[in-house]
Image (cartoon, rainbow, N blue to C red; front, side):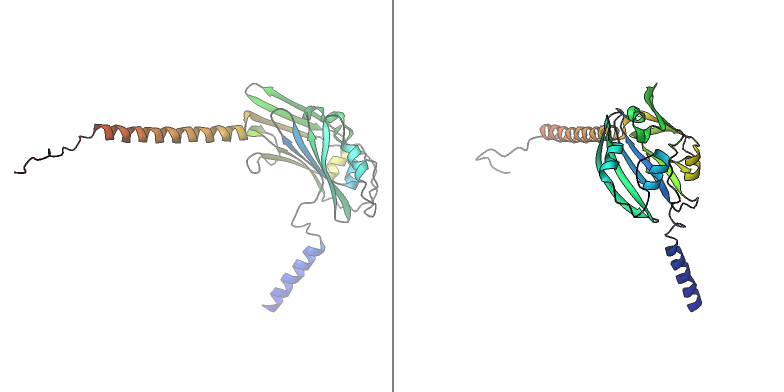
Length: 253
């Protein structure tokens, strides 16, 4: 029994020493797009500084000891139609990571900005659905040097779809929480320029509008039922025979 406990402790220590890489996926670059049916969006980017240098050609120092260049990163992402709303940093696996959140006025115009110029975006109505397409092409081929990548690193693109999904081509063939679709790729493939093809078709009514419509219909149905019940009770009351009271002074036989 003691030997088994000791073995479990050794395994736990080994996993901890590996930084949890055997348990959690190690993403070096992530784009998370919250799309609206009018083409506006909120876009979050979580990426290591070395990944930004190697993939997007950012003029940043990839050293983990370098200071966080907040204003330079803000200027890198800001541009026409894009407003940086949040910017922070953290450290993982001996590398600095940046976290950027942006409001986007037109997702189709993102490709005009340097951080997203590797993608071609398309968003339009096609018959009875809206279709979003993103083709991610070759990276900027910057040089981040030796930053400790071991080949297990991943990149990911996630789309939060605003309405019911009619079709998507995600390799996993599944959605998360009903409306999130993800495309993963090994970092090594992204560095080689292997394209990522994203295609999502969605219904023309947003999930929020659909929910509000169903909620409103439920309220109307409940009120109609209540009104019918009150009308029925009132009608029964009017139709009930009136009780007759004996006249004053009359005798009971």
